[in-house]
Image (cartoon, rainbow, N blue to C red; front, top):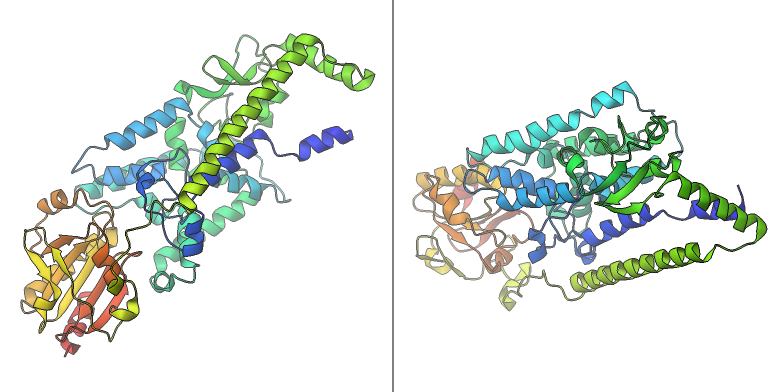
Length: 504
């Protein structure tokens, strides 16, 4: 191998550059890592094509798999037209090309696989394991969320119990930040289980090529169902194919033929096909691959002649090479301009920052810390009345910040309902946080809660209580208006009774 060839192999491939580009574009809010906060701007309602955790501090869009589960979980109240339409658009346009080119967690798996180690070869075992992701799609991503949808308790089961990408990109990125000590206090067996799954997955990546994508990813399973119809992908010219098996041998995943449901369009087979029968296409447009075998032979001969004899490519070939190079430069210049614009927009123009709270609510030291007197506030309840804190002086006040999309929040609402019924002399208010508030009235209309509810549309009251980042969040005040409890996380009936009994 000559020096030029070694230098070419050391350069990152186009696919690797696109993978890095997609990971950075999905996670353009880099200041989120500095602040330890999740971006909540308007773009968070849009799905990106690849698996990328919504809770990643840098994420500027929603994960399509998480959106699918939440849409299914809400299907008892409203149809999931948007999410289904987006997934169909991605699947029918790109198919599993998304897995090979536009998935940040796929990139992480491939980089780990480069670590020198014995590698597990594909075979009957890996081909059988490839069916597991379809079971996870049916059970955890669709079945369980749909079952709980009719029980008014959203449960995105795959995200909650399994997803290693979410644990790595979201959970660890948040809990390791020094400002999120409250999150670390809430860790329990569920997080320990998910962390174990993440560690095992990352270790497996060293020995197995993309094990999560091949065996566990429901999103890849969903896209694979649309692979044959996808506009973009690796296509085989069957008239030219001699069925020599080279493509299956060099493919790192469990394909039975080029472009089938397991193919992630990595393109490894294109250069190795002796008949130039494989192409990476977008409809009728060839993105990569020789037009025909004769052309391939001619190009190889011209390259050899140029390298050995010092000759130059003929005029048509030189013109074609120049045009191709120019198109690539224009495409990359446009892509880099878009990326630069996204980085500037999300990190310096700060579109996702909430409106500044009043001066008296900006610091926990001014009121919401235990032992302090909470500043007065007033918020309109959903029954048309108003809850003003100062009017409840002389009562034990319990303020719970929750959300319809927060499973633990919904699960603990009956505890506050029971407590309020047992202690009519106490003031209990359930305050929905500022995110995704449109369906709150409809959601409550289908329940039997008698609690007073309010919606904190601008986030002012949530900020006053210190409940800006983690839900559920509960604040308890004694009869003098002094904070005796202020913490994120679920509460128990016993804890509420203990706080009530101890309140002066």
